[in-house]
Length: 163
Image (cartoon, rainbow, N blue to C red):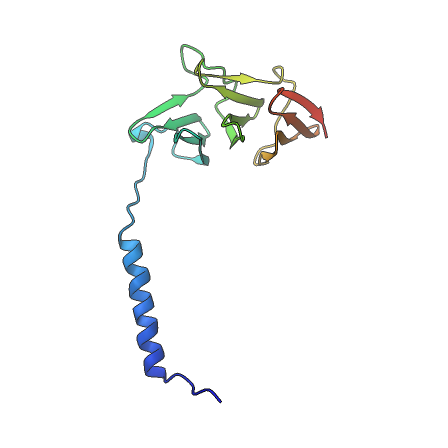
């Protein structure tokens, strides 16, 4: 029969584990970024990391790309025009080829890095994406919940199919 661990020994062990866990968190540094730092909006819906190390933040006022030093913002108001039809971004996803996909209230678009702009794969007013419905990547397919049902997008051919 095994001898139970004395309560004093268990308490010492617990305190040692607690101190070890606490010291791990003491080494962590958290930084908060806001609109004062260049973020498009303080209400962030989703954050993803792409294959090149950029952090993309979806907000109610567009998309912010963070390179570790500064933000580059993409909104409808941008004078040069970046392709976004709506600044209300509902979700982000990065496919296995490293392409950033974005759902907005007016459809689905992807980021074209060489052109530094977004391209929609649906016509204007042709697709209304459900708010708070997440994008789901499955292989080369991107699943989207719309007002007219579930849609599937082939991310290689940019073709939309009804589910």
